[in-house]
Length: 164
Image 1 (cartoon, rainbow, N blue to C red):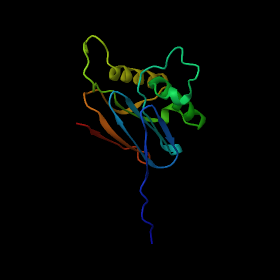
Image 2 (cartoon, rainbow, N blue to C red):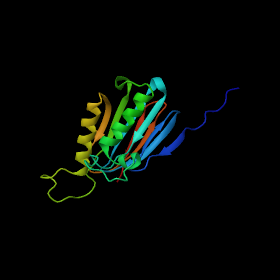
Image 3 (cartoon, one colour):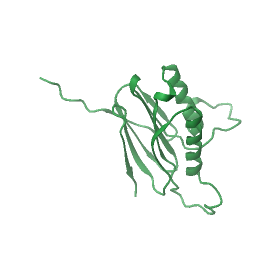
Image 4 (cartoon, rainbow, N blue to C red):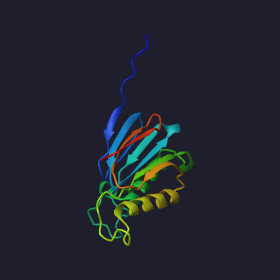
């Protein structure tokens, strides 16, 4: 007699958070101008999802800054996870990366002359992922509507649903 499959644990990743998990799970989030970056390391059975809100960690961070506050920023969140992957024995070449979000969900004056937060988040993510040697396997960036993200860490599959 075979045991019925247990449903995967679901973890909701809030804006400004990162989640690294070592067992199969569904990591979920909702993105607007933020970016969501899904990482999968099949050999180690590790999945991670970060949901940073702003492109760059401040040059002069407040004295009370912590890693938790740093994860609000695209560059910090990627560097933080890259460091954890290295400590766990992963090589950048084996990390599967999928990148989402960065939409222009809020109307802006002078949008054509000034980059939006969504666009700046996308640019920061692409730049820092490249710095670490991570290849992007899939992406869906920009647009004008938010997306609901479900990342299955056992298969690497990401399901996106546009909002509105």
